[in-house]
Amino acid sequence: KAGVTQTPRYLIKTRGQQVTLSCSPISGHRSVSWYQQTPGQGLQFLFEYFSETQRNKGNFPGRFSGRQFSNSRSEMNVSTLELGDSALYLCASSLVPRQNQETQYFGPGTRLLVL
Amino acid sequence: AQSVAQPEDQVNVAEGNPLTVKCTYSVSGNPYLFWYVQYPNRGLQFLLKYITGDNLVKGSYGFEAEFNKSQTSFHLKKPSALVSDSALYFCAVRDGSNYQLIWGAGTKLIIKP
Image (cartoon, rainbow over all chains, first blue to last red; front, side, top):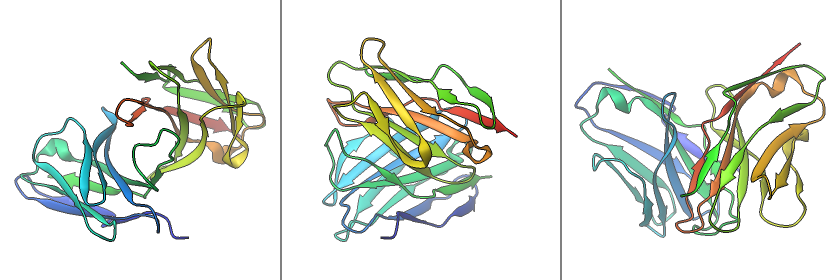
């Protein structure tokens, strides 16, 4: 079974631009979560989607948004990029959300560099 | 509030020696605990989890973790370290109120030949 895939793997943008990242979950997984990883802040939760609906949201500004499609694939968008948005963006999928025992499986991430 | 602490930023171990990566947690209800490993320029890989039952949990790549309720700890262990175990290790606990994973800051494990 294929793992979580994320595209693109690397991205360079300039301040003020916007970016869209894509995530395809493991086949059969219906929940997708997004995280931002930086050396200073560690892993920070962005949001979680299930059945095309955002179920949970972290403490990020409105410039960060996402969506999920009927096939469970998800995209996240960051508008008006800032230098501080440079990070590794990780997508994780699980069978269902909101289950304590559920394991999240991560993709390889998209490394975004904002210049 | 739920929290996870990984008290060591870095752990150095000689190849062949046993290794321990420490994790302590604070939760209001039952703890659901996870360990993940991250190799350079890669995503996180699931190692093992504690849900209930035996305090010693066995996982991938020969790793195991010991759940200790009285000490609120969930330390990751391996009897004999390999150079290829060198990576960044994350402990996480599930927040039962909103089901979010609360992550530790990570511990860099360096195994020297």
